[in-house]
Length: 73
Image 1 (cartoon, rainbow, N blue to C red):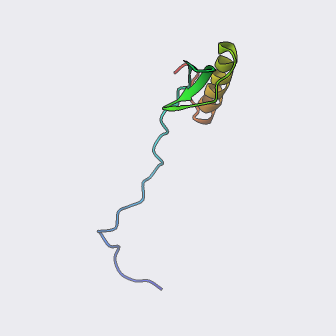
Image 2 (cartoon, one colour; image 1 turned 135 degrees about the vertical axis):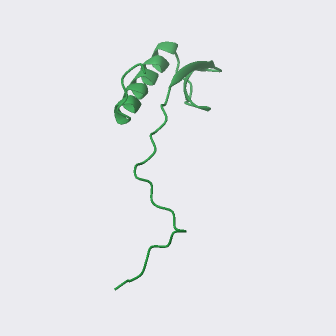
């Protein structure tokens, strides 16, 4: 059994997890095609811009759903 008082030097655990930052996917032209980007990372090139845009939109919808964000916000 433990007795005594709590140590004031021990920090308390945070009450809630910090919110996630919003992710924004983009499409850029690169050698060999079009890449989907997030921050400074990029996918392998897609042969056409429409394919890259389709994947970027799908990833954005999934990220928004996971973060409970409204589309377009």
